[in-house]
Length: 292
Image (cartoon, rainbow, N blue to C red; front, side):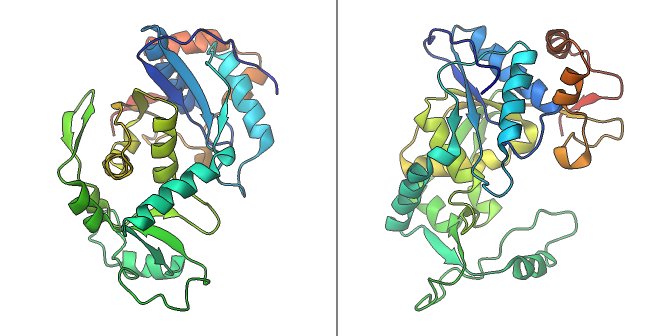
């Protein structure tokens, strides 16, 4: 691979990570997040880890992995230890899912995307659609070989775990309310682990002490806190930072054609100067930071 990291000694205490998906090129929003996680660890003598969330085998691309490594090096960011790939950790996710199955807290769901979309039409206007639990408690005799995903029975899981909370740098102590998110998917036939399950297992396995990520993932932390309790895993501290948006106020995203770091790098721009500008809150013209 290109752009090999500078290996530093493991510092005590603080461990952060940057965990992009190689389904497209990184953009300014990714740089903003990676710099925050990197600097938080480096400023405290800790470790900064790089994890590639390539569990989506149909969309992940090797060339995107190469670009991620090159982009981070261009920004002047270094990481500790070997890069971790989720695709090499499927047995860990399967073991976690089996643990939840043994506890009777997950169930197979046979609903199609069309079924779920139709159910979503009943959600209040502007509200996030929550899976209505159509398959919860149904007789699955003779159906387990049909295409299905595995969902967490959030109500039963919350009852087993009891009251939970987690710490966010901005919000303080937050009472976990995973049940309000409904029965989230933990594994699909085409993806052996969902984001929720994989990130929870990986953060614990890598000893991550501080999760630094965008505020768009604040709500997901409710689910992660519940999974941590069920699986007997430690709970890190959380720091959800503002998102970078375009002039239209929409957050930067690969699918919306946000300017990529690779394009800037190949155009000869100075990555370290860009990183320093982002650290100081000086955003390129046409971009802004939003807490929503």
